[in-house]
Length: 242
Image (cartoon, rainbow, N blue to C red; front, top):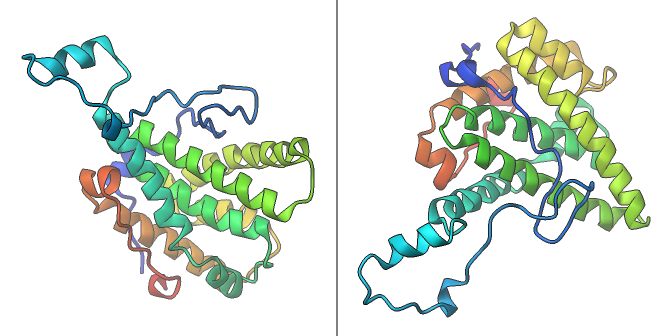
């Protein structure tokens, strides 16, 4: 089964500057920024005087960072990543495509699905912001997993993350070109990155190409609210795409 390139994805795709490093408040993984750019307010302990007319308007004008819409979209970005990390069964890809059961193979699976979500997000007005939050959440998760598996210093963990971030940058460019090209172009990108030019068979590569096309088709059908604010992604299986 084949699917045309989604119109929304074809218009913009993901070929823009991407936040490739986690920028959680108070931490600087790669020496770029120590702040995420959004300040959170604990509304449960903040009790302003609502008697004054136009209170919220005055407050938001004087406190530019107080933005419920941004906070909602930030939460949606983390929820999107949870939809990937918690719902994608990496072991299924290991078995179907002959990938070794390693942290790097897990990252390749997550990377592919994060890229597909990034491509869909860039079709929305505020998609760039949410896309960056998804990538931020991914690096936080990857850092945590590396720390659990690697008995190395913090510097060593940062070196590993730096290497992965460089690979991620190259991977999304290759995947973008493959998505906008024909199946042969997409197969080449998946063969070089996902299968590392040594795993799988011709049939499994064909199934993987069909899977990406099918999944992008399904993501393109999601509304703005479904992809930005209340994500609840339903991932298809490899067998469904054949």
